[in-house]
Image (cartoon, rainbow, N blue to C red; front, side):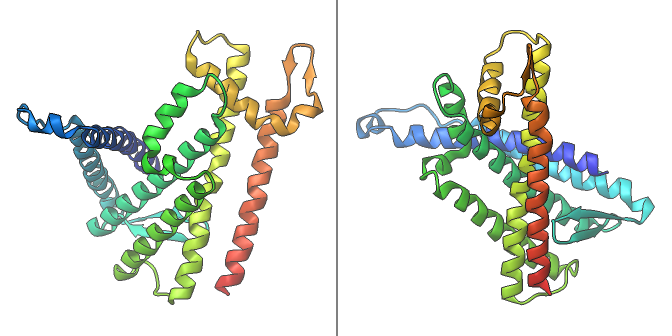
Length: 279
């Protein structure tokens, strides 16, 4: 059932991204309307199609909650969700537990998605990347207009605040034990940082796609140029190692385990600090 939760979360997040981007673009167009145009006769207002996408998000979440509850109720089991420092268990036989889990996992998916988009935007610098930069800026919305060093801080704060709210809900439903404010702040800090550790999956996927594209002709598409540019930035630390043999480039093969081990070390460090604070 975890795969069902993941797939439906991804579907809802895709609709969320398209819907929120459309709504932000519509608000920008409204801000650009001059006073003279507002005085002219205008046609009757029409509903922005992006609102239908947002309604689709709600429908998918409701469907996911009901589906997981229906499938899990006969089993009378629990579903666990890992938040780095601790597992959280939800009763499949309880509709309220499944509703809470559905909202929590979707929020986590959204925050991780924005972290991934921000990372790709930071890597997509240079010539030939203008169209990708414009698309990512549209998805990131107001965050893209902030200073570069403020953007990751904002994402971390969003994750921290989200966990504070979610944790309060879980305590009210007696899914998590009550904690003091200081303990909750530390817990939220580490849980928010844990979202950044998922970048190891993004980096691994980019490098694997680059490897496949390097040896298999997959057609001409602008996205492959973007991929080559992104991977070139990822492989920059190993540029001086000259990991080539004839026409074979071993740099991506070496980079995947190196990046993976690096993120594992960071994860262990966060776990160690989090355990020390908790004790």
